[in-house]
Amino acid sequence: MLLKQSYDVIIVGAGPAGATLAYELAEKGVEVLLLEKEKLPRYKCCAGGVTSKAAKLLAFDISEVVEDVVYKISFTFNLGSPYLGQYSQRLMYTVMRDVFDYFLVKKAQQLGAVLIDGQKIIQIQVSGDWVQIFGADNIFRSRLVVGADGTYSVVARELGMGRSTEYVAGIVSEIAVPDDELTKWKSQAQMDLGCVPGGHAWVFPKRNHLSMGVGCLTSKARHLNHHHQKFLNSLGVGIGNYTITRSSSHLIPTCTKGRLVWQDKALLLGDAAGLADPLTGEGIYNAILSAQLAAPVIENSLAHDKVNLEDYQEAVDKKIMPELRIARVLSKFFIRFPHLAFGAFKRSDGVWRAGCGLMSGELKYADIKEGAGGFKGIFNRLFRT
Image (cartoon, rainbow, N blue to C red):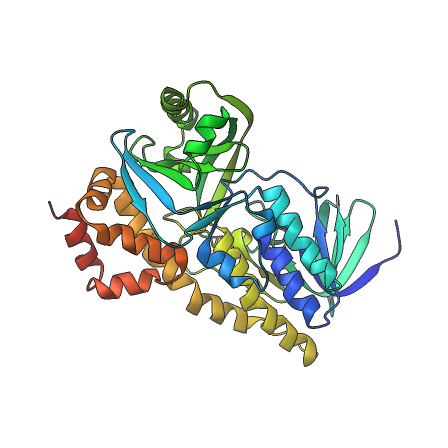
């Protein structure tokens, strides 16, 4: 066992949440250790969509790791005739998560954050003024620990912070297609409602291939493999020959009630806190946002030599939770009535424009709800024939 290594803050997990917090804290001169169980860069099962609003949160340009920029999305219902929505501004960037995450980590390292990857955490103990993190061959300690380690957060598990969470199951495949077919997908994504009961399917364009996937609530995921193959087959009709180069599955956590995101000397970010969007499944935006909400709270605690993380809970409850509650209500509608949701796209460009506003950051769910006169107004418009 090696000598203990001490830091102001230890962040467990080097995804967008952990890397962003490491960047924010290192910029302020905080001694940060970023622990990651995998060797970086590592493949991450993810559609790889970074919304324009998520990219705008970052203090630096991400263009060097962008695979494609999406301006158009083709919507279908149960693989039928499409509605093509187009927007003059960037809606989404597509990335490979191994490249994107490592890019964020290196930005933090440039400011002084320390990375130790390939370090699986075995145990976490809070004792007196310190938090002790036990790895396979190291013991680290810090004044605060941050769980940014995703769905299966060891920080949440070790400190008993997991509760009130629902999961979305997803399967993602990377598929190689002929160059002429790849050209047809340039700057265009596809979203299907209806072919996956209780969920949706998608295609995202990448530089040299396509990423496609399916997702639904775990309660409806019994036949998800079948729906994944069905969607692949439907793509094959249009794109001809393709080769699956990689396929994997994952769970996306969404908190169902007010979630406790801090406890004593620990706090949770992003997926570890269950902050993924219940409607879209997007996790990167709230991963980055939660890190930026946590940073000043942590800095203040360290500056006053008194750990008080309750302000982080207040910030999450104010900035993130209200949006998740609205998204959850809307997701129940989309799950139960996908044909009506798709019909709303075809009837009115207003639905498409609202979606563009959400992706670009020009609108929030609360803005849409208020503008429609509440949920009743939203549903009246969606049910309108």
